[in-house]
Structures are given as structure tokens and as C-alpha cells.
Image 1: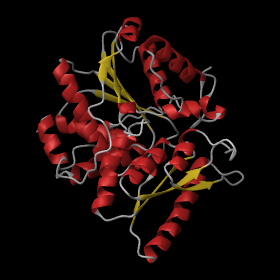
Image 2: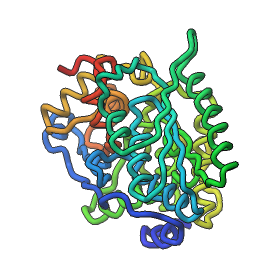
Image 3: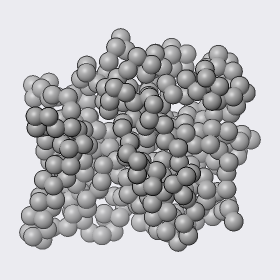
Image 4: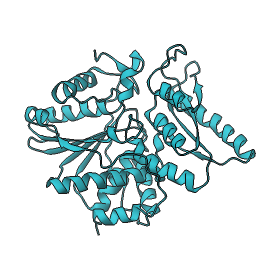
Length: 350
């Protein structure tokens, strides 16, 4: 039996949480693009979540992750990502704000110029994170470099705990059961707003990476008994177990709320046709999508995540995967700091 939004809120409010963002984030119609595309296109501005100016989807997850770290008495928080990781930056400010020392291990996909530190890495330093840059070995893939960073951090955590410290180890993207609670709350908020506006969305589009946002949205949609088709556009290569892992995150988050499993791997259909040529590597379709949204609506989406998801949405309108007249919501998950990052990440947007 489906729950009401109020009932979902009541369950979430029983869990440890720290307030980090400004909610609800805006939901509104993109009038110019709606007229041009022949659909009713709305945007959910989760790039506006954070009290540090640079928000994003990770803030919702971190409310529960840092809340748990505080409840558990942790004095250090570890996490991971690429050098310009939005998740790492948001974890850093969220931990610092709550009196917890952030330690980040960052895989260097793009070479770093120590004389010209930019964007998220600059913010990480301003927020006084302990930063470990992990350079790729010759012939090593990003995933292999990242796996090596996990092992380095594991040894670091063991040393600290031997000294009497308590550490929380947050996975890439905050993608675990606790983090996924954030988007059970996020999609509940979206439906509260949509109900107040008298809108029933046919489709929801968003970018997915580590999968925690996708998992939380699907858990929330199923818990509320809604019919919105969620189309998750991957910003990187995904393996065969991606949907299975997302389902485990969904049901793990629901279990923390005291709810039985209601999500199956078949609920997910992540689309990995739009990330090429690779993670943090721009492509022409994304560049065109970024420029279109900027020109028509004055909104910026980044070339790593939301830009690729928005390019997929445009292509789905063109190819009929989104039918004319459909009501569509695009969840903007942040990432504006990349416009001040390295040229290799930014691409040809200017």
C-alpha cells in the first residue's frame, strides 16, 4: 500500500540528520524550451541546495551521512572521487561545518597544476580538507586508480583508529543506504510541489554516477505509489551489476526507515548512451545542450553530469522516446563549479 508524502516524511524524521541545505528547492516550468520542444518541461533546481553557494544532489545525501557521523561520534570523515569531484567538495564543507575533519582521496584524471588550483579543488583547500591526490600509474584506468585510493584510505583509517579516533568512510558519491535516504526525501519533496501545482509528471530525467541518487528516487517513487518513468542518464561506464546494486541501495535505505523491500533491479533502466567518450570528457551533443539551455532559459548545466543528462532528454524528444505533450521534469543535480575547472573537462562551450 502506497504511503502519503506526510507519512514518508514522518519515517525520515526518525533518522539521524543534520540540516545542510535550503529546502524545498525551486520547481518551475521552462516556458521557452517547452514551447520549442512541444512538451511541458519543468526543472527541479537541486543545484540550489547548499548553504556554501555551490549546492548539488550530494547535499541531500550528506544531511543523513553527516548526521549519522555525528550520532556515531566520528571525528574524521573520509571520501573519494576525481580531483574536481562535486561530492568530495560538498562532503568537505558539510563535515567542516559540523566540526568533523574531512579527508579526501582524489584520483587525478586531468593533470593538476599546483600553481593554478581551480574550482572544487580550490574550495577543498579553502575548507581545510586533508587532501591526497592519487596519480594514475602508467596504463591504469580511472577505476583502477580509484580502487587504489580506497586501499590507501583503508590503511589511513586503520592508523587513525589505532590512535583512538573514530572515522566514517563515505563511498564515492555518498552512494550507500544512508546516503540514498536523501533522495527518498528529495523525490517526496518534488511530488509535494507537483501535487500543489496540479501536475503529474510522465517522465523524470537526471544524471547518475555512483547510483545513490537514482536508488533514492526509485525507492521514493515506489513508496509513494507514483507512475513517473524515471530515466537515469549515466555519466560514466556502468557495469552489468549497476541496477542490482542500485536496488540493494534502495531497499537498504527503506530498511533504515522500517519499510520492507519494494524495489527490484528491473525497476531501473539506466541509459549509458550519452557519456562517451568518457567520464569528465565532454562531447559535442552535451556542449550543444549546455548552450541551448543557457541561451533559452539562462540556466547552466555542467558537461560532466547534468549536461549529458540534458542532452539525452533533448535526443529523446527528437526521437520520440518522449511523446509530444508529455510532462517532463529535469532534476538539476549541480556541478556549476566545473565552469571554472580545467579546459579538458569544460570542452568547447565558449
